Image 1 (tube, one colour):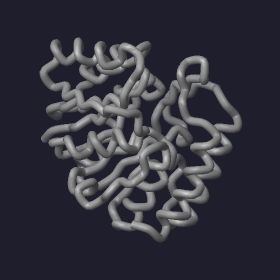
Image 2 (spheres, rainbow, N blue to C red):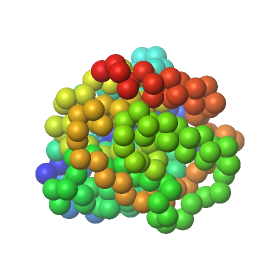
Image 3 (cartoon, rainbow, N blue to C red):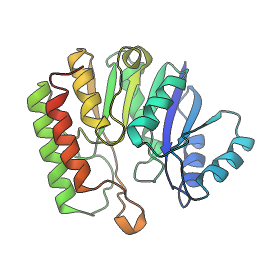
Image 4 (cartoon, rainbow, N blue to C red):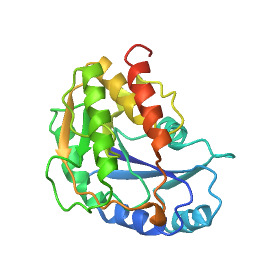
Length: 231
């Protein structure tokens, strides 16, 4: 079996090399394919990944000619993936690739079609960062659960893992962070088996390059309502 790791990147010069090297060291028991989608970075991100690609044959590097957003980068990555299992990985070191064995286990055991990580189930260390981000995440998760009839604890989490068959049946329309509520609504509507796994979280602040803003929170709220009814 093959694990495709989709890594959207945008201006991640300080962290992208460390992240990719960390992904390469993880033992999953599966062949790994790293699909890095550069969303028109303005710094040296692209050059760094090109250098890593020359050292690691399992890296595929894709480019956007203009910045479109995380959702668009994931859409590109999913379309290019050839693995049996697809996993989303941010490039900012907030999430530890050593979690992969725990995340993919419910799929390998035949219990799950989709696995969400959760920063709120008590797994591993958590950096203390923003109170209102935590409140916002929990509120959006609750509203999403109301629309989907799921009981997730962390809808906005980066770590989401899918069987290939799941993503073959889903069209992603959101270009930015609206991807999270959109994909949640669509896997719920598809009646796929969804599991949660507790994960560690090494959050960063805006001085360290965090990109999500309150505007993305309002877009997520709109997407929760929209994708309750729209495919």
